[in-house]
Length: 312
Image (tube, rainbow, N blue to C red; front, side, top):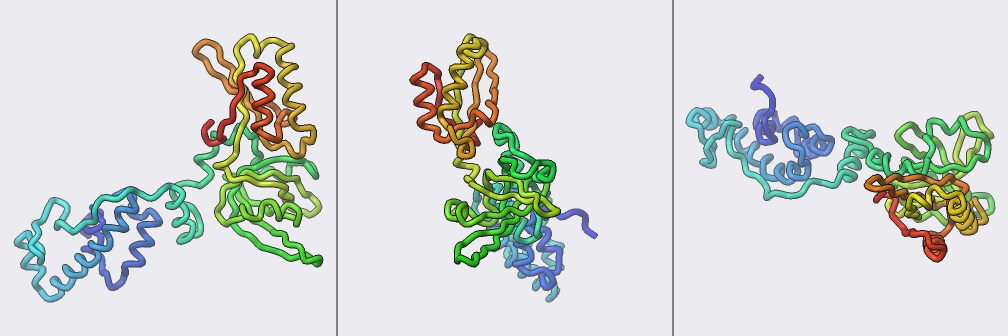
């Protein structure tokens, strides 16, 4: 009736607060309903503590007839003057906005789905170095194929086996879909502390196609924020000399004779003039321990260092 809402105060002043309580407004803010008005949701939550009482006071003034006269005079019942967006409502001191992950958590809790983004979207570029699969394509892989994926845990069902061992059945998702992941007792002992709803993980496992819908047998997992890479800096001569390439590959193979335990990718940084190119080694050259690999490479006159995945 009076056009678009110009602020949180304008909204609270114009709606019937008997129908929209404070908790409902908090939920609307956390869901992003006011993002077009003000993108700092945390500021709006803090402002609401003041604005809601202010708007209720104005509603009481209007119901008693006092508000109409004051509105005509351009002042509020507490003496504040009107501005172009309405009356000067009280505000909280400035505060920083909520972290993106916390915003998304509120959206999921209140709506059951994400609105403004997906928690894994910001990781899409950096995690490509791991060559993760898309969960939507899990059924395309053969039985027992070893793979990794970047996922979030949606649901955790803990199970006790007949022998009394603990295991878990997870519902996991990525940007393409959702699948079920089974964590058998041996793996459960290792990864149990990481199994938290909404946790963002890099997981390693095998494809299980015994039933109609493919599942993932989870072997290991690590929080995305703690995943490390081995970075090897190569000059043009090292990158193009066959002998140097064989020597480098030989060192990497020595670092993990058991390939099922190799979960650390190796990335070459090829520098040529001002150009810098990242080259990912195949999974057969992944290693088991960052520190020993870097030491072995440095001893062999290859310049290597450890880098966090999210910093690539």
